[in-house]
Amino acid sequence: MQLLSVNLAKPHQSEHTDAEHKWTGIDKQPTHESVAVFAPGPRGTGGGGLAGDTVGNLRHHGGDEQAVYAYAREELDVWERELGRTLPHGVFGENLTTRGVPVDDARIGERWQIGDPGTGPLLEVCSTRFPCNTFAGWMAEEGWLKRFMGHQRPGAYLRVLEPGRLRAGDAVTVVHRPGHEVSVSFLFRSLTGEPDLLPRVLAAGESLDPKAREKAERRTAS
Image (cartoon, rainbow, N blue to C red; front, side, top):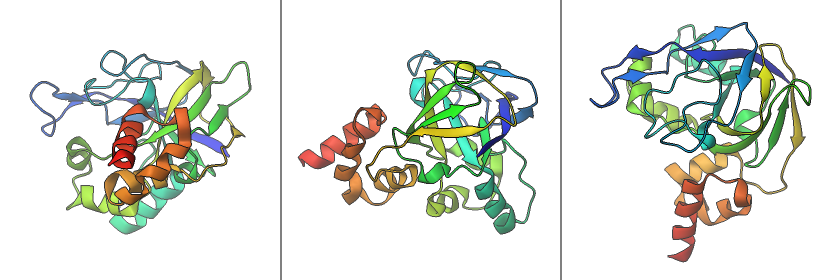
């Protein structure tokens, strides 16, 4: 399992964000340099977890629970065939484009060691990506949000447990995989179209994104 590409934002203005947040960091470009990874802080104050990256809208993006976004190259290849266009690394706004990593089947609380322990970061899978209008405008594909959501392979958000440095070509090693059933894709399904799954999401425990946990707890109590 390998880190195929590390992608950093090239900020640009977007017509698909609100007036307060005209700048977006969805246009991420691969870098061959070594990049520092760190816990950025709470959402609203902290941006992304990669040095040199940019988050345009701190109210809805970034922070510790969205420090790093990973997407599988294999899924980009599926979309290339479906859309009939080339999709370079980083085009979905992902920080990490992986090869051989089952990103959407990763369990909430799963831990990835990137590179060597002691120098590379230790990351924990904690949430799922939800597509927004900025993403739809960036892709410029008819019905993009509905199509992306229907695919149910959204990619994973990870928090930073231990800081470090990474670069393209680093190995990705799963050092801990919980025994529960709550994968990234399972969580996405529960929060988008299958609310009956929400009580089962709580099996992910403290590793679960707090907003998802709150929604699952409300569903369980109702």
